[in-house]
Length: 148
Image (cartoon, rainbow, N blue to C red):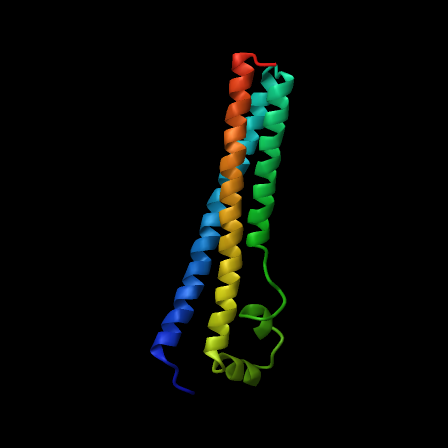
């Protein structure tokens, strides 16, 4: 077994932990977006909406659906076999030892790129959720205020 740099091992663990934290944040935001969509649909169904409220609310709902799509894409399993389980499932037992003791720096780099993609998707989804929610609030105000 080769000795690995403790700093490299710590970096590997940190990147994997960041991916797990991002996935947890995605799960919570996805549940929130689903609840907002369901709540908005329930409220909109029972209110007499004017054309302006329909347009603004429809745009808000569209942005929330786009946010949900980004969130789902962010946590979509990567089965290409580049890292972890999918790769190991295709190898013989003796090959696994070689891969695991191989270049940890390359794995840290690959996982870091994956973490950045996930984090970027999460960030965009948060922005869409905020914008969509603001539009839904505006649609409600337009409905209550009676704007045409």
